[in-house]
Image (cartoon, rainbow, N blue to C red; front, side, top):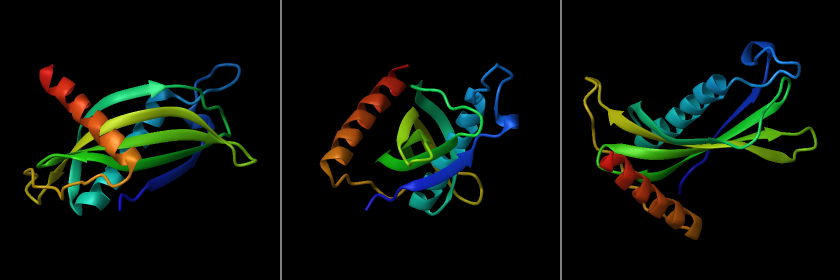
Length: 147
């Protein structure tokens, strides 16, 4: 089963720009994405990991001061020593309704105690949604390798 790793943050003044209605810095949410994605990758591989790239990151809606930001990370694909993790970020309103903020795809490499790449457990998609995501991950990988 593909477990979901969840992170929850409250947007504080130090996370925002100085605009009239303070918005969350894009760089701050990117840091949170890297952490929750890294935790998901570590849990999956049972090893240390390092971020290789942020393959895709789309901002859909803003988050503002005092918003609750919920992030969910899950493995979408594995190679021999690398894996892709999708991170979805949402603003969670006080009534529990979630609005998407962004979606990111990150690639990590599993490492041994000498920082050398090591094999990762294979990911086999089980649900229709996982199969679609896996196929999309293969296409992202093809494009990445073509650059």
